[in-house]
Length: 470
Image (cartoon, rainbow, N blue to C red; front, side, top):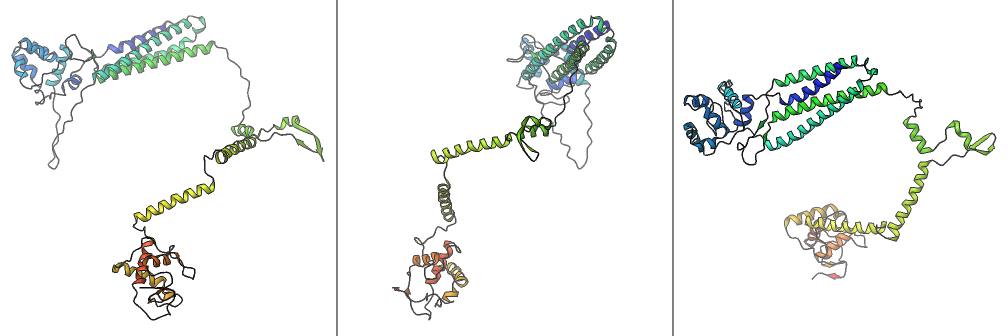
């Protein structure tokens, strides 16, 4: 029991101690705080930093370098430091205050002074232009919000570990568990080994939480500067603590299972899903219970079962009754929906509007009320082609008539105006002239009608009709 107690306490201490086991490194601090405005070996928004520390030291102002980084405006205002005044003229923008310690500043400049630029292989045919992507500034306010939630989660997990550990230690005081603890302690030792190894592995990385002292931060800046690496660190801690909580919970349920009496469950026959669905749909009685629904009469030894109607059929019958009432009220009482004839009439009106819109769009909105005589050679040529393909059988090639009347004299049966001829060609006549509206579009009918009126006089059938062309 002492061994398991020691392991649990060690787990809690390691999980809590991980929060404070990080140290700052120069590379990470430079990239998160300086890289936006400074470059190591060349001037940028701010001057280059390589050799800057030695320059301040040679000038006898090495101590002022820390104050310059932490709050350059305050140092310039104090009038101390000749180099501070000289560097302030490099850029019109003042260097913002940085909440860093002297040790962190030393780490930054140690990284800068030991920085070796990467070698670049040059190729005669390649473009050696190097594009440096701008470094995005850290969103400290957003990081602080996430950090607060993760820290709260850390506290909850630690409290859960303490509660579970206390519960387990209470259970372990009984003699029943003394013999069981040896096997459990082996698993607990394995868990402690995993957590310890993880903690040492993560301790090789550098993480730091920076607190902003009074007067150090800028206006509206957070009181705690949390880097992305800090969030990753505390998230890793939370994951480890969660593993500990889950493991302790597993141990707790194992101990409960040891003392909980085993309940012997009666074996229930397994019914397949198909049989269940079939039972619901048919309401059939099992064969071994059919004697309960036997009817009294029989014929030649054949007996009848008083089965219920299948539920699916009953439900469908009720559904048709409900549907009939809805249909009756909808179509015949309230008249919300249209009956077939009315719906057909509406659809025909819509179709007529669509046809008119189509004809208007295609410039074919021509009928017997607005047809005009077409005189262009292209229109008359198109009319002649239509006439030759469809009219010569009755009126012959020159229009002199054979089965149909002569179209070249001055006597007409239905009228000689372009509108009259258009109507005759379009709708046909009772004397055998077929309609052509189903064969030709309105423009084609107008073309062939104009061609007929342009035909010269030709000797053929005797004049027919009572309308004399003036």
